[in-house]
Image (cartoon, rainbow, N blue to C red; front, top):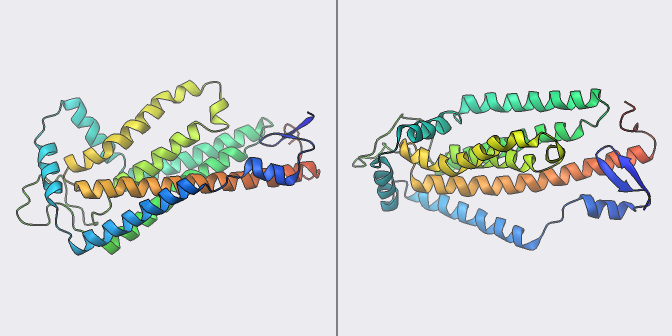
Length: 275
């Protein structure tokens, strides 16, 4: 079949607009939608329950006592403290700024070499948008639930690393890390990164992303910053917004690809390499 190159890939020359839309755009499927709705209902219901009873539950106290009484090897403890500290608000903002600038620079370099920079700009916008949505929604839940941090109630007997004025439910670090590192993992398996000949360099980053997501909840309980129920709600919240943002990102990038293809076929967009 005769094909023609587009700014972001190849499409058959005689492919209809409807076929392009079906190929590029992502359709909503019943099972993910139902799971998202169920997860959101669970998050809202648990928020109402915790708001009405903000004190730690027995499972919260038991889990914190068990984790804080466990002696870990110094390197493991240092790693736990690191993943909490590196995802505090200020380092997180700096990291997002680095990603934004770095991906935009890579896009400009790609453009200078005659390649399309669109995917790199889309990735930068996707990271900022995902983290922004997850953090914003988490802040709204924090304010509405209004659950005090560990150490705020008498008789807790837990070690608290620092007293933070922000509220506790859901865990902001857990929500942020799942959305942030989850989206980075998603990007690392999509174009153009997945076709980069040096993509093996990203393996340590991918491993770190997985470890950070797995252990951030444990770290927050270890430091006495959150209860188990805070952490579980943070994982649920982060997963919901991550999946929603990935769907929106794929929809948006598919729409951009169709627009660029239409401009290219109409002669308004130069061929790749002719910029």
